Image (cartoon, rainbow, N blue to C red; front, side, top):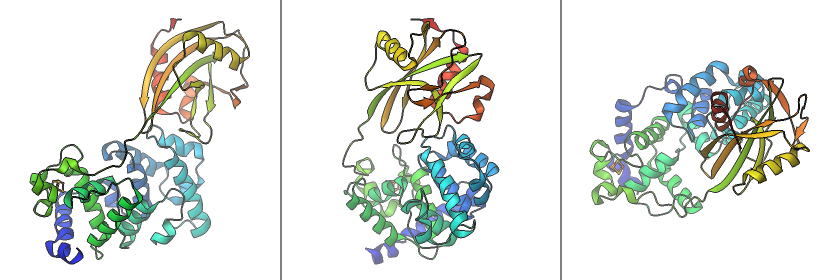
Length: 363
Ligand code: SF4
């Protein structure tokens, strides 16, 4: 396989294409290990178009490892607000601390050291090691899986251990070890711009003459997956309680989505609740019956593995009523104008935007 592929010029073809067609992106202008690291973490689960503004803002707030380590977790989460998958931000922060403690604030320059940092797996370690330090490790992300699966008609499912090992070995066989950074970026760029999931543009693809799927006309048969993602339905009932124009919020805890972010008072259920059930559960959590509960808005929020059906209610309580805790979580009261100090999930941002614009309707 190796000799044949070298002969067909796989690496040469994609690197030549990359040199002409690559997008002008800020982390390519400054390919320092820190910039490559931040860009790779942001671009996991996020499109370049959406990630670009976040990247620029993140770098201006935290221009290097030391400034990131010195920031509070709350500030790092605020910079991440809206990007989702918040464990990425928490891990970046934790890894910055590790780099300061173990390497005096200087990013380590080998794959073996990088992979021992929080949130850096084989993919990110290979990207930083190859792009910033020229170490020959192939990057295998969703774009690379798709490109290789189509080009070589690989029927092994990409979501199995065997499949992952096969694709990683194949990518490493193809790798141009004299120019691994450009090779890896070319693979990812070609997958993102040409060999796209829904609309592969084979007519302009530099791999056309060596691509099995193009020859057989079946690119949509690849990549193969062994199982469908099953999604969990969750019903979130949020409540706005204001006291002296201060809004009650709580912080989400470990072991669930949006860890460390802030939200409104929440009652969660795995099935839809009736209006009576909502009021009853709320009364139990408040240890008293509210004076009124008004429905404001409903919203569906889709995550990779979860469907969240959210609804927002306004709660009227007696004057001077203040919560200390709600469902064992500490309650903080904040003015509307100070909400920007708290990192909020996108869903809460959207619910609050509706709340401050829409008149509530009484149940
Ligand atoms: S020829 Fe088509 S299917 Fe094959 S790698 Fe290129 S874009 Fe993908």
